[in-house]
Length: 438
Image (cartoon, rainbow, N blue to C red; front, side, top):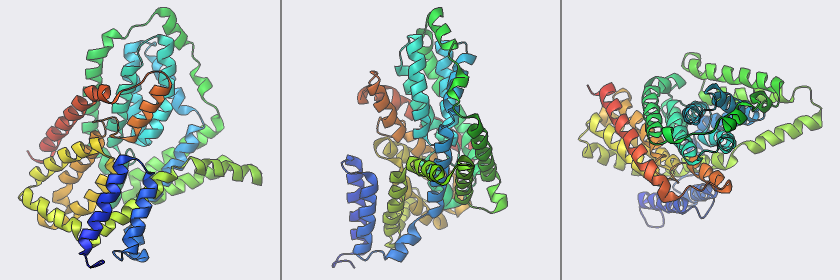
């Protein structure tokens, strides 16, 4: 009991109020999460020690390590180089560029976070489309969709996958094996749709195409020495993720080691002042708002878990699906997509994880429940394409587009986003059915 009320009611009220405030975006999300986590402790639902037990430090370590690595990689200019190089490989044909930038965005999003990917790709896109004299709108749209679809393919591609992978101790290869095939199918569908509706309308003059061909891709590389170091460390980290299950080392440890190693190489040979200055700038690039948001979120969700709220919800879901894995998978897939289109998918997935864990004994155990877990990942990640606020990358691209004179309206975006999101969920439904239930 808390203040004479059932602890379940108090915990649920704290989470609901926090999520409503998050949805309004009136207050910074890290502040909301940390305040709600503190209230969980003040009310006695959790103690400080039990609150720390609820924090998944593997997830935080994975995020911090990868943010550090990506932050240093950005300074090399390699991502801009790849975008320009790819555009020139299709001889600056607007139709071909639409396709290659979508593919590049998807691949980058599988190994970087989506926001970083679009921050790197969109400025190059704006530069290329301006030189070609073609509409920017379809290029930005397909990059938004490709970033969310591509990020679904790997453990590190999207925060929901990081949460699920850490909670279930899944490997990098588990995600690659189970989700990459459906991501490839969805990317083929996405490219086909955009090529059908936009491809033939995207034309440019020979003079304009020559202007793009004259861009020096190599000039985008700002530091070849740092590039060699960064690519080596990134390759070692990816190799570590792939072999993590055999090495019995957590992904967070691998990412943190990679980040620390690259920081060492980045500052090697500098004097004390230069070294500290460089490291402080890299640490400033790390998205600490997201890190503290995750930390607070873990605590408030843990409050729901220890009070038994999520166990009750899990039991209700078992009853609703009659313990049928196929029904549960399809329900989770579609509910996750719809909810993630409307609100941030991170708090939704963080709440769903302990609830689904509570269902496992009644549903036949972890192995039997795996289709449901993959459905959660696919629904949450693909659902981010549903609206302009469905994923952080969407909001970032919209802001950059508006500042460059190419505004993307909420309703205009939905004319494309809802059909794309619904069709990718249909594809995911078919994939899950064929993969697990035939």
